[in-house]
Length: 127
Image (cartoon, rainbow, N blue to C red; front, side, top):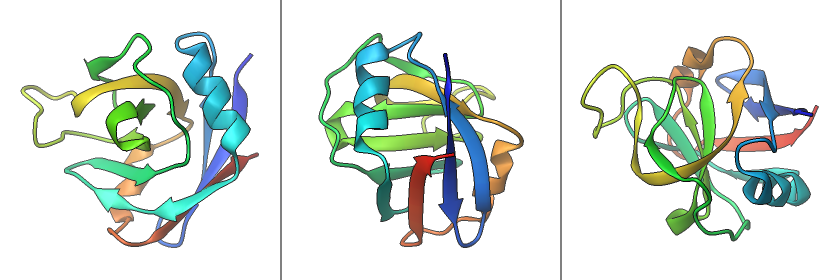
């Protein structure tokens, strides 16, 4: 059953999302166990990513994702929120720099993350 979380930044406000263990259970459980997470935003095209203390390898990892999906990027131990095209996109879908473990999705309009700026504080916690 999905677990509701909230993602908070000064510029985007409070955004509800959910983590679902169905696709990548090991990664989802590791991220949930690490909550709350507070970090600094990095922007890469229409993607927000930020470092965490979570350490897991690839688990059904994929490069192409859907708008609104939340992934874990193993090489950078980072959470990624995709809200549009990235520099490696070849079509309209977001494409990660390298494979990510998709663990959830934003509830509502993920485009709100377009307001965020690199260096801004981001916090992820249970809703």
